[in-house]
Length: 389
Image (cartoon, rainbow, N blue to C red; front, side):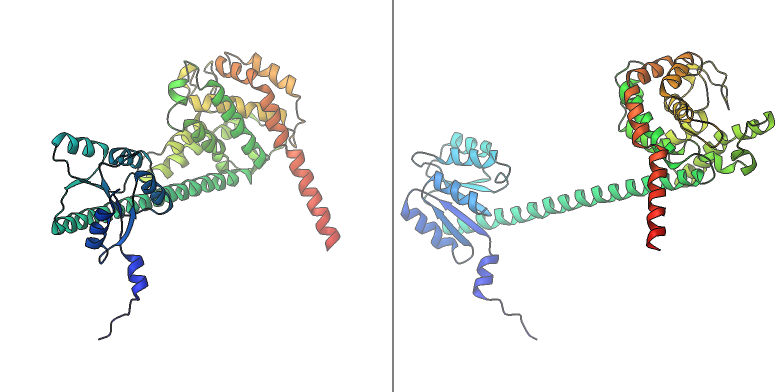
């Protein structure tokens, strides 16, 4: 059987550090002599010097004289406990006083124990050992708690990232079968967030929009508004001209198809998730109209979910202002007038007012994520690739 050799230096550095604070050299020598064989010992002859030492290197425990000139033990202890970096260092008062009110005051400041002078060596060693063990346990629990908190935060971030990627992947799936582009998805979710932020303090919307993280949930869920188009036949979905009545009836089923597919995902999950609840609402109801003439359920007014009312305006704005293979883009001013005309008929009147208050941001979003700039970038990249090849 062999044993690993530990150098005296390594042994010394791994021992707990005890700081002894006393203005009397004899007391320092006595206390140091009692503890130096077991612990690393540092000494200070004043409260000010003690705080300087603690500021440079944190001890594991402090033995603190109560009566000292300039700065007494109470003041030192109070300073230590008010500092987040030093408040967890256990402080044991050394005092010749036997007054209970002195002990009560010290404990109230955060001291863990009192040792009365003249000291008894065995009691000093036992109490120091006990409080160092308690500190080691407390440090372990704090470290464990901090680790677990960091791990939980990491896992939450990971889950949120997976959630975001999954939503984008599902939305992109619908995009690959439609004439619309990924920029439409990006623009509409930004439009929705602008409207939601504008209405967050509105009496009719505050209780919904001020729920925990609701605006960001809307932002994340918005890309799934047309996920049901995956189930629409290409002959209808990609038709460049106007749909017949029968074709439009089939097209309208994309709202229910999207809702049902998200609902199935939610059942597989086994519990409700805010972003899935929101995505179901948006997918099913973003073609409902304020006056009840929309589809698929013919909902009207406040019966239409808030999420869908926001998406309805965002979707119509983007559909009108963007150029498609079957139509030219419409100027913002014309789109704005059309939305105003749809107030109280197609759109919630307060949502229209929010749009009018934020229309400059809508224009900024459209310009920032325009399909033309995306196509120009793709064309430039293709041209560069052809030159290289």
